[in-house]
Amino acid sequence: MINIAVIPARGGSKRLPGKNVLHLDGIPLIAHSIREAKRHAFIREVFVSTDDAEIKKIALAYGATVIDRPAHLSGDEEPTVTALRHVVENISYSVDTVFLLQPTNPLRPTDLIANAFTIFQESGADSLMTVTRNHQKLGKIKDNVFIPFNYTIGQRSQDLEPLYFENGLLYIIKTAVVLEEKIMGRKHFPMIVDHPFANIDIDTKQDFDYAAYLSKNESLNEL
Image (cartoon, rainbow, N blue to C red; front, side, top):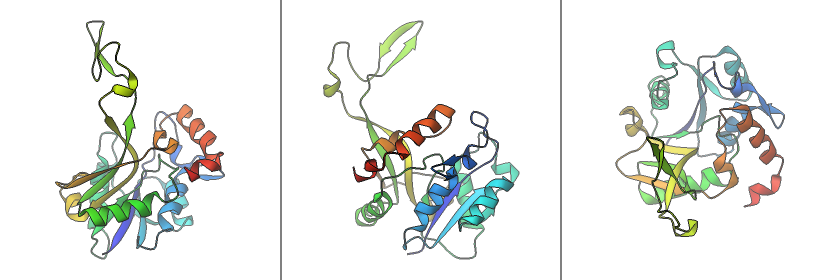
C-alpha cells in the first residue's frame, strides 16, 4: 500500500494574515504538520499544496515536496478536496491512500496517526476522520426566540444525546474517493478523539494564542 500525506496551505488568510508561516513553538505553523507526517514510515512522501512563495520555501526547507496549486483551485470558496485531487493527479506514481493534515491543526496527540492508520486498515473503511464529542447545549435563534436543538430546557448536560464535531486533526482517504472529489467514502469510520488538541483550529489570533498556550504544556501529549 502506497500512502502519501497532503498538507493544503493557501496564502492570503484574511482573518489572521500569514497564519501558515507564523511561528508556533519556534517553527512555522505548517512545519508542525510536515514534521508529524514525516515521523511515520508508512507515509511514503509528504506533499504541500500551495499558491504562496513563502509557504513553498518553508515546506521545502522542512523536507516536503511542493505541488504548486493553480489559481483556479486557490479561491476562498474552493473545497480542500480539489487540492487533494490535484496532488494525486500530478505526481509520478500511483497512490492508494491520502492522509490529509491541515496546517491549522498543528498539535496532535503523539500516537494519533499510527493509531488511526491501524483502525483504518482493520476496519476496511475507505475513509476515516477524527471527531470529538460535543458537550454543549445547542440551539437556534428564530425571530429573536432561542429554540433548543439538542436538548430540552432543564435537561442535564450529562444526559444529552451524543453529538460529535469534525475536529480536523486527521483524515485518511482512499485515492478512489479523492478522485470522486469526496472526503467521506461510502464506508466511513469516525475516530473519536477526546483530547484538548482537538479543540484547536487556528483561524484567528485568539485561536493561535490558545494553541501556543497548549503547546507549552508537554504533559498534554501523555493524555
